[in-house]
Amino acid sequence: MFELFISAFITFFVVIDPPGCAPIYASLTSGASSAQRQSMAIRAVIIATLILLIFALFGEDLLRALGISLDSFRIAGGIMLFLIALEMVFEKRTQRREDRAQKIIDTPEVEDVSVFPMAMPMIAGPGSIASVMLTMARSEGTSGTLIVLAAMGSVLLLMLGALLLAGPLMRVLGQKIEAVITRLLGVLLAALAAQFVIDGVKASFSYHSL
Image 1 (cartoon, one colour):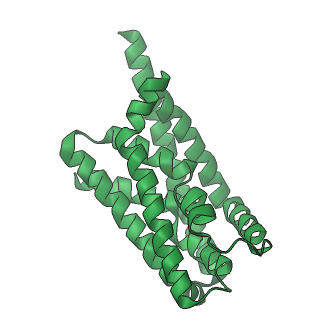
Image 2 (cartoon, rainbow, N blue to C red):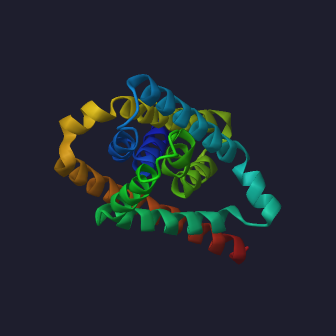
């Protein structure tokens, strides 16, 4: 169970990426007051949590209704996470997030960034939704489900802390340290993504050989 928590925690931490979202949030809310920044950070994390909870608890039923097997989703989700990992290693993901943030900044009438782009797609994006569903599929029984949800909750709490402390955090970390951390996490995510694909392929061949 401890191994499941660590695996789930690392997966969620890498994909949701609290250290990577902090500088984006700081730039998006540069013109807001301290109270407004706190309010938007809390609202963004709550909305993202609700979205991820829905997919964690009902995602498998949704796949079943669409006629998609869990093994197929493992393979597709693993490939998608691997692409995200490549972007992290080569810093393309950070650049894309910064470009999205700049577009919001350049649009004066948009003030509340809690729903878009923070809650979705930056926190509860396709990668994190896929990660939640894939990790939930690996859990067994109620205890396993609770452990995965606890890991997800821990990362979302870290995300809330990162958003609330975005300004000071950026001054401490700096861009160079953040880039090194992002690349290391990208390598870890690539390995986890490969494991998802391997598990999906193995399960598919086992099913067809029966």
